[in-house]
Amino acid sequence: MQESLLSVGIDLGTTTTQIIFSRIYLEDKAVTAVPEVKISRKEIIYKSTVYFTPVLSDNRIDLPALKNLVEKEYLKAGIKKNDLQTGAVIITGETARKENASAVLQSLSDFAGDFVVATAGPDLESLLAGLGAGAGEKSKNHGEAVLNFDIGGGTTNAALFIDGEASSTFALDIGGRLLRLQKDGTINYVSAKIKDLLVELGLEDKIRPGEKADFGDLHLLTRTFAKILYRIIRQLTLTPAAKKLFIGHECGPFGLPLAMISGGVAEYVYRDFTPRNIEDVALFGDIGPLLGSSVRDYFSAHGMQLQKPKEKIRATVIGAGTHSLCLSGSTISADESVLPIKNLPVMQLSLEQSTADIEKSGKILQQKLRLFPDDLPALALAGTVAPSYSDVKTLARMIAENIPVQLNQPLVILLEADFAKALGLTLKRYLADTQIICLDRIKAHDGDYIDIGRSIGSAVPVVVKTLIFTA
Image 1: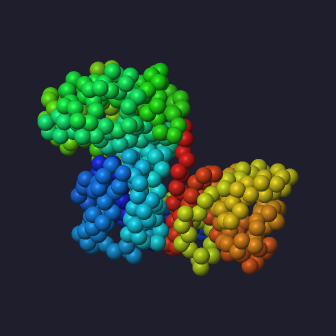
Image 2: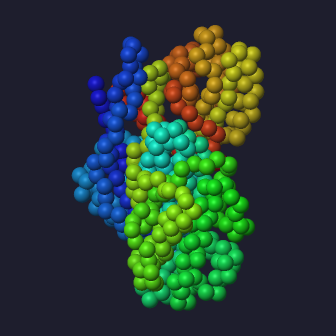
């Protein structure tokens, strides 16, 4: 029997805001009596207009205008927020740094039903954009590593995929709206994020607000952006100013992968259009078209063919709406009365096979729980594949003895392996008065957050929000 979930993706970016609705179909693939619910297919049922993100100033998002925009698209799609079971609302790029970004996220999350991601981490954006662009799928189907650069208005978010799985992510302050200008070439805005790079290029007195832009100067800047991306792909040395463009952390070594470009700027990477003057550059009041053509030309001149993405400007929103969900099925133990659960922090505990090692883990568990004095985090257990019944009892006793039951909160256990039902039932013997959610086939790490939805048939939908996903 096939069931389905209705999902939303809302991407509020530096330049554009987009919404998609999709239907995710679930199917029991089991060949035995044990259910094995998997996602069988995904269908995008509605794509909104691509809007310019409403902004009042460089530091505030126009919240009333944004809410009107979203309400209008829900009406056009014929969808109500209560119809939704999953999805993601994310603020990306420079917009995530606006003064009222948190208030905007809270407001938008009200449009997304009971179970939805609402976050703005650049590493998560990198992951979702790469999935939406098809980089993960290409790496799996062709057996080659693929590095996707999602170039937007304020940032470039990159994700490396190997055999279909994300291996590392990183982000840079490279984007089409870091410099804005009028049709006559008068510069309106220059982001402080590129100040050191302009100094390094000798352009600090030429590219600044109020000055008339010179086409050659702008081309030097966008060509330098393209050069930085190329040198990252080829693992070549970067200048000090280029290194300062990384957001949070730099990229790690990853060999020589294939390169793919998505994002709004990608529309001009893969289009046969080369700006020849200031008027061509300022089509959208920024340097996006020139940056796109510079990336295309630089990579081509250096003998590197760019792979074509499945999606360009819509990559992130499609990733948010169709790739943020995973399922826990087959052998779960869940107290439905406490679902849905949103924004629960994750604490990972690595386990070995032996009973002695499981018992030693109790001390580690106590130490890590001190980081959460007021809340009981989800406990993600890594390792312990196919344990014996004796080990399951030992594990359940160890958890029960170390969990602070006085917090009177549900106990959520996430397992990579398939013994959630056995562990959940055994835990009930030790913690009879505690509500327990024990889910299998879920990978999560320290620093993650999770949303757990109400069960759909024999499966429970889960979103792991990887806010810290480094190289």
